[in-house]
Amino acid sequence: MPKFAANLSMMFNELPFLDRFAAARAAGFEAVEFLFPYEHPAEEIAARLKGSGLQNVLFNAPPGDWNAGERGMACLPERRAEFRDGIKRALDYATALGCPRLHVMAGLAPAGGARDTLLATYAANLDFAAEECAKASVKPVIEPINHRDIPGFFLNTTAEAASIIEALGPERVGLQFDLYHCQITEGDVTRRAQELLPFIAHMQVADTPGRNEPGTGEVRWDFVFDAIDSMGYRGWIGCEYRPKGETLAGLGWMQKYREHDA
Ligand SMILES: O=C(O)C(=O)[C@@H](O)CO
Ligand SMILES: [Mg+2]
Image (tube, rainbow, N blue to C red):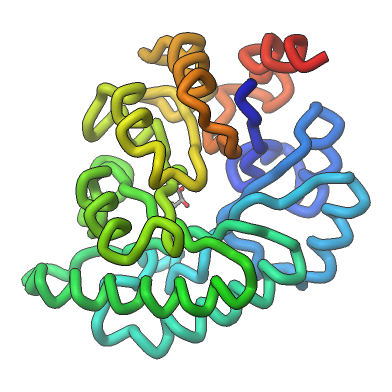
């Protein structure tokens, strides 16, 4: 049975961030993910997790100046020191929150930047992240992102991600397989999931093209989730979608997975 985690950066936006934990638990979730915890003390988030009986299964390393458009810095040669500091900061949070996965965003490829240099920086930074994460029993994950949502993002395809992971060692760095991005960039999502299964350490989902709940767009999710389950994926699937209306009203698609569980 697929296991779904609520993405608290996108879901339950009717509430302030810290109140979304209890709301997710009341809606039946047992796990949550979010983009960035850094505006809140780790102890405060840990208390919300404990108080709601939730586990935190994923969050992101500091991305640089998000409001200025930055989307990570792992591929940026001149940001290596900042990248390293960010990984250490993220691991302090991961330790406090008991979180097993850390999403390390590649960043935007600078105009005119030589791809070989960016790739070498990306690999070296991920190697550093893998070393540090291993000490904290955390697995860093990388995610190919479509060019429509983040134009210029350095990592776009699952093939690129797989070749980087293969070089670094799939036991050290995993794939964050976001079916929404894959459907936009590549399609063929169940075949991709099957081929990439040995690399996948976390999944995320939203329907396409609107990035809303499963069932609001073009994909037949019953088929996809059954296929993912049958192929033996037992990790978390983060609900990284923007609810079309109120979060709770849009959770009908999950009902059959809960009823099956009972
Ligand atoms: O956008 C996504 O997809 C993510 O998973 C985020 O972590 C990065 O924007
Ligand atoms: Mg994602």
